[in-house]
Length: 427
Image (tube, rainbow, N blue to C red):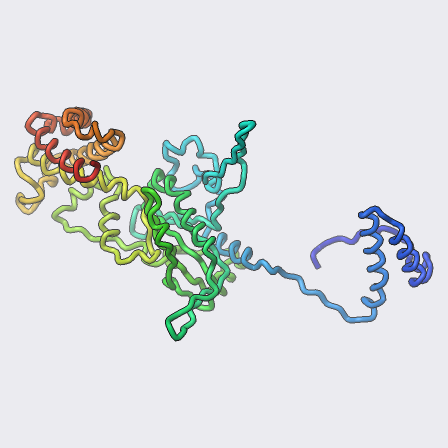
């Protein structure tokens, strides 16, 4: 049945050694005087085989072959259907490889997760080649209608999750254990830096469970104490029920899920911005990598419920967004003579005029540089206006498109805005 060839140990027949009862008697005698474990096991196996040979011949027998670890099959099916990239090299993934990960470009995605390092004090030795976290599958797919990718962290759970109604409410049954939930939070933390540095605009964290009917927004699980760990913000983990028969049919046909977004709810909704600020927003997004667009969507969402999770990039660059919004009116006042946030000119904002697109892009770059400088400074340095003024001037002088902002009067206005933000956000 399994293509295993038989092994012919001898051409002799069992009758050549005597009657079955005599053979069993001699085997039993040998077992009693044999003290080598391996030989004892072999003798007992031969005894059992001969003693049951006639039984096997006289009765009709059948055997069942299968697995009691069907969760592994479900994991394999999901990995193949959603084209897991865990075992792909970083250079083979979308968006290329950032400078920070250039030295690891030939490593597989699964290999960049930190491993525990065990140390012994005396003598001083350590071992970091031990097992670490391993998600079931990671899928990376392009979001419809957007020039952005989603980094999906999915765990195939062969559980039948259900809620039973009780007198005093509902009781969850068939759910994964707390260890599975905490590990799923850790998977997001493990890849957070990679997601941020590579520029993925979305990230999802989900449990995939088999079901007779698909329920793409079945529910979610949360552990509030894990929502914030240090400066990291983790979201709820969504529970998606996939149609099991369809998933198995896809796998057996050697096909893949054609549009992953159909299995992942609420990921490709793009907000609409008014035309009046379109050019300003475009220039801003060039420098901030769409952080404000996603941040505004984030703010408008109801309780996150595991549907959509955003990378740390948004939190980190929200400070740059505030700096940009603070210094942009000063800049446009220098360039055009009025504040584009308060006054229109022939139904257009100031950025619609001349080479303002390039200027706004440079202002966005300055905003990022200012934030990076701020994060490297101590509170004492941040409180010193001379130091702040110096690095502010340095940032502007490196951009020839906006050199006029380095004048004393402009710097005074910029200093006022930036110091106000520093006091509010960083001190």
